Image 1 (cartoon, rainbow, N blue to C red):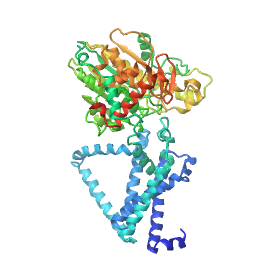
Image 2 (cartoon, rainbow, N blue to C red):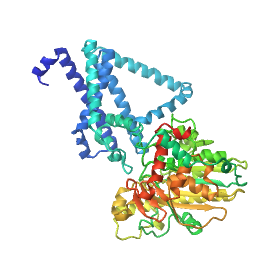
Image 3 (tube, rainbow, N blue to C red):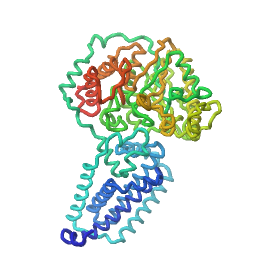
Length: 604
């Protein structure tokens, strides 16, 4: 720092103060970011990502926190210590979350922090808890005693406040200058290459705060426009009074994690890894489920198939952020089926904290939500390759199906087929026959085939269980998205040329214990509720009113996701809609904005 410049504008004590907090903030940021790099990345070329403007913003945020605390306590080392505790805790949570779920720590994860409070009454009853609390308090007292022995480098209150405001201004200005496109911010295929490793953790958290807010209103958005759409798509009272069928079947929606059709990708195996799943094709036809994501983010197809809305135009990876804390009850597919007399049950082989499912399942009107990792003790688990087995999932589904004669709507998600596949033992019966692919790709595919074979066996058990019941059942079985096997896809090159959109296609099979037409189908996740009602031969006015807009779009297109596919099979980009689809697409997009990010005029 130039002494002449400083002496002209700052007092000597302020200069010393600035030098100390600058060195401390560098120490804090570099320590946290190197820890993240060591545990989550390890690539040397990424180590030098500090040498960019974002690193300056990272430092300015740390300086803002230090000066904020110092304006309160007037002790520079205490303020730096408190800042270090906060940032290192965030870095630790970020590392743990990425290790477990493969995704970074986001701003809106603060919602998760509410759940541990529920366990406090149980924890405080344990002796070990009180021992840890006592040791923790003693440690904190010793640390604070040591810090207060250091020189505080006191400043007048006015100077401390000016410093805080100055660094706050620099941080805010930094966010205005450094803009990151949404698609680069949240890449669907690899969070390891996301902006979090380029910006540093603190700017990333602040940026996700920006993306957690509502998008700018669409140009045509107004109460008058929404009410006009509502009038056009209204349902008469006479239609609402029509009688329902007497015997409604069970509806089972079964999502297999990271499922792909190897044959469709040009992979030839010695034997089919999912023989039972393949038999369904012979009975009711082949189908494709179009996921809004690729390689991860199960919550996005889950959101679409439950609400009929599209993830594409939303600005956050977890679209339920727009429902949690905004709605006590969100009318969607589960609430519709519950009103028709269904028992609504969700069972997933994951933790209830993942994507805040514990919060949004009750809002969507599920009678019960079970997260196996949260609701059952570890001693009860049955695992395969460090993940809960599908057979354990099916076992718990059976235990929680009610015994009365109510029809069941079940949304079941497995997790055993989640990457990585290194732990799966290769089976000779699923040997890859292709000669033009690398040995590395061959190895991954053979292990992957063993994983989905495990899923197929459990699926057969689930179907046979419902076949043994007196009530008929419809099954919709598909993959939530393709696996994030970038090296495999690079070798196979299945999404080149005019097939780029097929990276969102996962196999779909529909089966019923009664006769349904054999048909090859393609359907995007947001149209699944309408497909279910059509299979039940029910009118869409049983669904919430906004579904009349969804139905109007579904009459024109099969896919409205990362791309558009009309009923004739022609493909369009979302941003380049053909003239004859523009109005119905506009109505759908406006209603979605109104329900999730706008003023909810449609609900009035």
